Amino acid sequence: MVSRAVPAPLAYVPNALTVVRLALIPIFVALVLGSDSGHSWGAAIVFAGAGITDQVDGWLARRWHVESEFGKIADPLADRLMIDAAVILLVVADRLPVVALLILARDIALLAGYKVFVPRGYDFSVSVLGKLATWILYAAIAFVLATPEGTEWPLWLFWIGLATAVAAGVMYLATAIRDVRSA
Image (cartoon, rainbow, N blue to C red; front, side):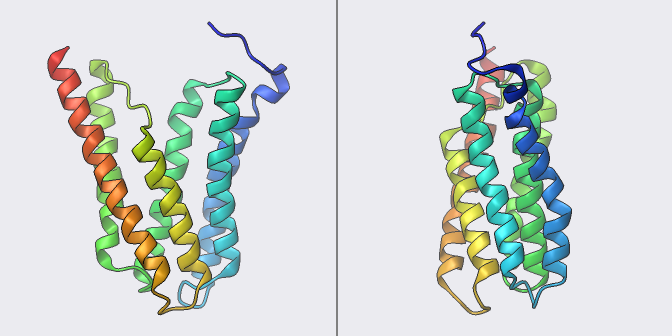
């Protein structure tokens, strides 16, 4: 086992950032609900802040050798909940097309896959493609929130994020099925 690179109090910082991200979800939802049809600088800033904490907590956990079972579950859960909440709210506000709900379908499929494959020994570690999809979606959604309705370029970025997220979801499930069958 690799020893920690930091003292015990600092070792909890990555998980604390994940908890902060979870706590930001209701604040974000309240800001979007109080916004002008999904256009809100406050919501965009909170959402972007959540995206930044996602990057920082993972980087610190790996750098400091303080990865935890809590972090392996809570970190992607916080991302999924934040992004899913944003997608639902922005679809309802007519800022994202209904097809954006594919993000939720992918997350439900991954959750179901997690429940099926983890007991059989498969480890759903986050892939580079999955991380890239999350980064793109955080950026795209923050830009959708910050720009006035009708601004097209954030939607193009969202489409790239959606395609990347769906590809990552398919890759996760295909790899899980292959690994479980060969085990």
